[in-house]
Image (cartoon, helix red, strand yellow):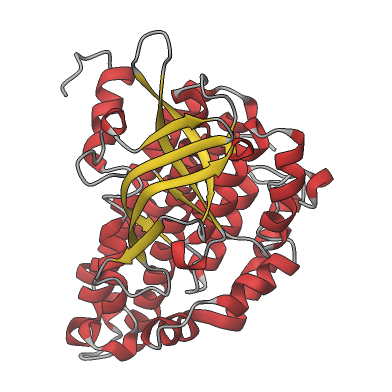
Length: 386
């Protein structure tokens, strides 16, 4: 593919995923959230059809594609109104890290289930006192004769109640210097000493957020993913795909909000013509369309750079894509609500439920402020400000 068009295969993938999403839609998603259910049926069908595993190597049961293909799946499901948040976590972050850094035995053990959706993995890095500063995490892994012992706390971790394992960013002690350095451990969610507590959130979503507690959780040696000396490099192997997927998730939601707004603007008539004929309505919606397309293009660029192995440039593009998509979705939902007037706040139109989730896109998986810090420092050469 070139810089501005997607391959026929990816376009066909988008169409197939859009058809699957249409079977479920926003009503299914919201009903599941209201009833406290998961979107299990959609997850299982997407897994059976190979959509969750499009970026997993073929030898481990996947489609052999790349992060751009997985992002396309994520975007189309979000556009259909049934986004799968755990796609960002399980196949994108955890799947990428295991594929790049896992041993052959670890890949054979975990990737097939990840590819077909029969296994779901969570990812935990954020801590109560660290926030955006991953260098301040204090969850620590202590080496023992037969493995490791983990102690610490994580917070705002998605989907732990659905996961068989959680990939934990912990710190190990350097035997020579005594300094702590990051390492990754795949911890079973039924491990002794591991507990979690749901956070009461105002977001309409079947996926929940949790605080995790590791109280001397013992895990065998083979739960260490990659090298304990690899440090920050292997961590960021998963964080750039996370930003790409977060951008795809947001642009899909923005496309849904815009479609709802345009449908209403074409039908709602108060004066002589539908309200969509008024520039006060039409121009903000046209502006949203432009913002969405720019975010989508930057997301595709980030994915292409990541696949090409230009990880610094991919990191820059992934941050910009996530920023652009976060702005686009917040504006899209806000303008869609404004287009509907009072109806925009009525549950039946399905927009007010999207408000908190769209706002999250400016905060996670990395805040807009930290993106701007990154661009100022690395793209513009300005002094570090934090």
